[in-house]
Image 1 (tube, protein in one colour):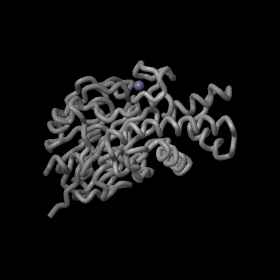
Image 2: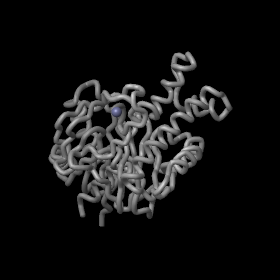
Image 3: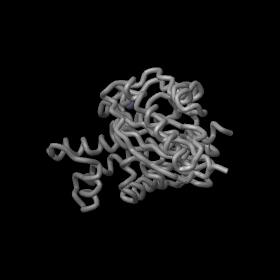
Image 4: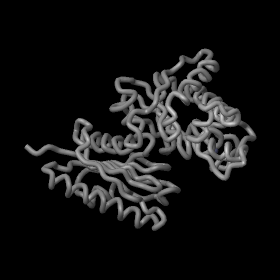
Length: 305
Ligand SMILES: [Zn+2]
């Protein structure tokens, strides 16, 4: 009997992470490609279809039967209709990705949202395995979250749930990409932390990683910027906890690479704010930047059951 595998693609603004994954979540093969978003949405779609078809061929060549395909993208995604509604960094507007993939490959396909899929993967295969109520928060250039209960992520009525990055934590604060002032991601995303430190220090540029390292070395300005960001994150998480009552909050994305330098002060700051809510566990994501791709595989596997 031929073993089966699903084809999984996590399509981001700059790159695509792709894999062949077995029914048990085992990764048989992985590859990465540039998204080439600058070439426009039609070219990106054609690229996705070619890469998926190439993976199907590779599966067959390895004696695996490609039985389904899962694709995840950022932005607003209608998972029920399989349409990428809006994604500025990939250039998608109402692209019926699921139908296009199913037609090209001749197998069932699923379309999902990158952060929700990543949260599903962390909940089922990663840092929150065996936890029922999970909030996954990805902190990178922006901040987005996924509420996962019993391994299923909730998309909301319009495919736009989990935008914790746009909870206002500093009214009148820095202007956010969404046009409002003081959103969590305008203060505490990895990009915002680096930008703030560069502004105050007079450096041409700085990354959140530089700020974490300088704060760990005891530099007062870096410590102040880092502490401000941690306090803002704690304010955002307090709101999230009031809404979701998570058992565990999994922090992923680039900023989580700081590990305990982020988690330890964040636990303290959240604990100080907690009143009637219950304190969740705060842990670092376990799957790194492969979470979205593994989540795409889970969506493909789920589409078969
Ligand atoms: Zn915003």
